[in-house]
Length: 288
Image (tube, rainbow, N blue to C red; front, side, top):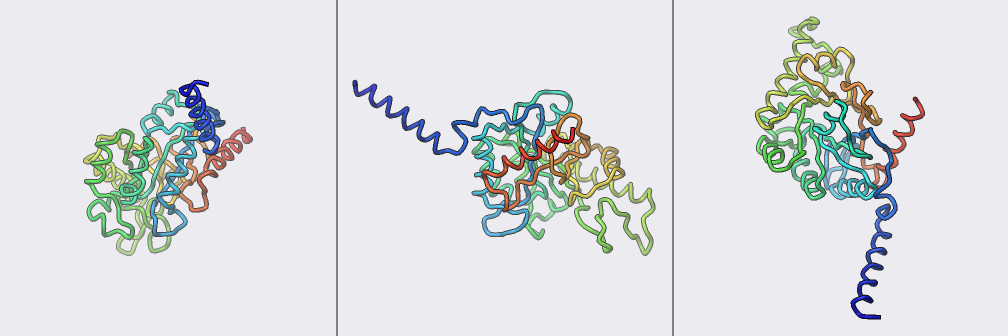
């Protein structure tokens, strides 16, 4: 056997062996798990020191996304998601990556991984924290960091998570959905509605100063919402609102009640996120 042929065959054998060592890559990277749907996955905090129910390490985050890539998933941007909801196509196995709360760890830990893997993502930001990003309990994104990420990397997006309503009142009710006391009396219906609409408009305006938008998407704080609050968001210019209800999105999904799958739990192993998505797919098919 000629040396060049021998070495060529050895190289092909090495490549084949490497593919077998990567879980799912050789056999699943062309598999269509679903089509004409979008799995929206949600994260909060990426941190290598802190542990919590909605916190995972940088390594876990990278491994989850890498596993989905190897299994044939295609990551889309929020703009592609908008186009899909309006009737446009998406690739098979479409996934939209979202983050809630606008933590600085998105910039320091998640963003480098997203850039490396060429994956778009949307972060729903609490805009009151922009005034003093290091003063919040968990440091949050600064204006400069948002400008940098959205300016240099296509597909990195920031959207609304309220300006100053991501909290609960003295009685434990969510500020976003519960009337509050003003000077010893309860808000009137008109005052409550004005508070929600004005806060949402403020959030949109602050983000519009940093990013050209459109600023038309919203994640419900704590996942708490009702039809009334959803209609108030629409009055304030929001067209898409994301919940914490687990499931996949189709064009028939109410755009003000978009489900998401929680990927940011330490209990979600790298190779189990695929299983979560497929389980939700099967559940949605069984309810038809």
